[in-house]
Amino acid sequence: MTTTTTSKTSPMNLQQTRAEIRSGGFDARLTRLYGEATDAMKARYLHLTDLYEKAFGDGNDLRFFSAPGRTEVCGNHTDHNRGKVMAAAINLDAVACASKTDDGVIVVKSENYPGDTIDTRVLTPQAKEHEKSAALVRGVAARFQQLGYKVGGFKSVTVNSVLKGSGMSSSAAFEVLVGTMLNYLYNDGKISPVEIAQIAQYAENEFFGKPCGLMDQMACSVGSFVAIDFADPEKPVVEPVPFDFGKTGHHLVITDTKADHADLTDEYASIRREMEAVAGFFGKTCLRETDEDAVLGNVKAIRSALGERPVLRALHFFAENRRVDAERAALEAGDFEAFKALVIESGLSSYTYNQNVFASSAPQSQPVALALALSESVLKGQGAWRVHGGGFAGTIQAFVPDALLPAYKARLESVFGDGACYVLDIRPFGGTEV
Image (cartoon, rainbow, N blue to C red; front, side, top):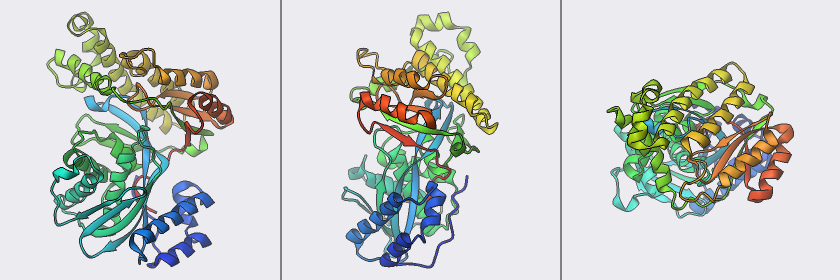
């Protein structure tokens, strides 16, 4: 998947840009990216120009950029043990209106936030920016420079519709958006989506201070369905999976159970810790360095040394890796029914083996389990459902036939509240100029 863009028209100032959007001259760009140029989408881009004017006054050669959020489709809790993952870009995105400057200063203002100003003459980590968005901007620019790419100043305003805390990776979308702006404003869009993702991960690891994996950034940057193999975490194999989701007669629905994520850090950490403990039983650092036969052949000894749950989580890891390959094969063959069956299988494995549907520390609180049960009551035999992301609290994912969408949404929102269901589609483009 490349980050191709439509041909740019001649440079336009603020008023000309607004006239272009209102008159329909921008419709082809919006349709390419979102499927249609709706009044709501036009209003969103006009809102961006309003924010730009409020922040910077008039501007010349205004340009627009977009980076999507993502959804994990298969490979639940496998990337940290160098496993396989399938993810997909979604049609919620972070968008920006930007213009180049010649002062070497990057200004990124986000709606409802003060914004960040980064002097590109200083591209080293700043302690005061630790875990702040400014660190991500500076880190992306620093990595561009380290890799020999061009870096320069620009003024931008952004709006992000990717929901925070939803498992859709709003932070990765922001990082990829910054990289996409530098890519097109100063490097003619020649940097590959995979490298933009790696740059974004570097910024989050080395400047922001979060030791994240690469899945989120890769899905946001590449677009559509992607299969990722983390056997070599320094050089993950990323392969787009060609499939037209729009022709399936389904929507992707992410439901937010609105449960509290507080005090779940150790629950999340225990999954990686226990998987690596099983690997350590064989003198290895991660499960990818061993195999399922070795685990099955030594269950009694592993159980005695570590307990039963680490064994179950290891078996989940190996089965999920196979499912990623099987889901990819199903999509490439155009067999969406087989794909849905594998989604359900993945969810059951997360529930029974990986055990990240509810927290063992609070067994009376099971919002994700309840959401899955309600999903099955509507979708059994027709759709698919699974835990989404880290689990324990938060969101679930479902592939819902169009005919069942009203009933599904009504059932879930009757319990979790109006607006709990986000009806989405898989987006064919990653980070790109609009």
